[in-house]
Length: 400
Image (cartoon, rainbow, N blue to C red; front, top):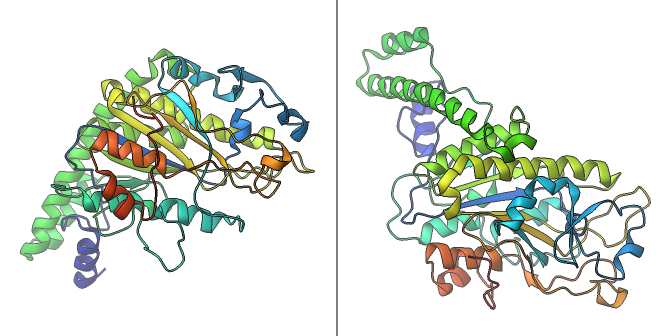
């Protein structure tokens, strides 16, 4: 890589010149509040009716004759998929819940790509509109944001963090280290160039700092696994390691994190495929809780999906792309132990296009109220700049 390319790449990342090809840049949140916000995109269209089952609706059982499996009773009307049983203590503590019959403004075409774009852009219509994400727009309008303001973790590029506010990505499999030989080589190669000499020194210092913090992180991971609720979590899985990384940064100066959990497209044998996705979701929430420690009480975790799925099961023991669905939330800063939202009913006349759960609230209203209540962002800014065109409506009571 030549000098021009080196400098251009470093400047584009918004990091110091130490952000060379030998180092993966990491940007941390810096915002004038003490609460934390974690946004998890559930990619594939989570079937909210199988996760939080309306067993008290008399039409439900007839719509899904082979998808009726064990459910944990929550309030006499809704039952929770039993794969999420490890989260029941959080439900009982008021730190885990859901909002039902929600959706983005996206309708009818049911494309994963379009649905996810609209979800992450936070717009009513993505075509020809803003190409940045709503989390980034939030950072742009907050006063006194300094330094690099957010990070996104995972392999994929996320629209939700894209925009004018600086952000960078970290892949959990990236190795942030420089061997002693690499450090010596850097010093020798760049010794005659003052700019690159400074960059090399910074790179070495960053690598040494990361190595030291890795030891501390390992000790913290051992403490996390001692938490009784972590007994159900497989700590060797990549999604758990990603959640551990997010929790470690959120304990420090980071205030916002966003990443994805895949595997929610359940056209075939939904009972099996959904089980794996729900296990990852449960693991992730429990790992965030254990890793955040006392910071958990200041944290809001919002789990959003691009659309729900059809009310009737299909011929392959799954469900197809639908409209209304559910949002999952957790965190000590939120008012859990409840299923929020206005239930529309499942009779054929109550369905959207006689096939999908009818949305009764825009899913954007929930993160909007979290921003308003936890971060002090005024309603006019949220409805005008962060989620243009949104009517937040009445306070749903999601914040404790």
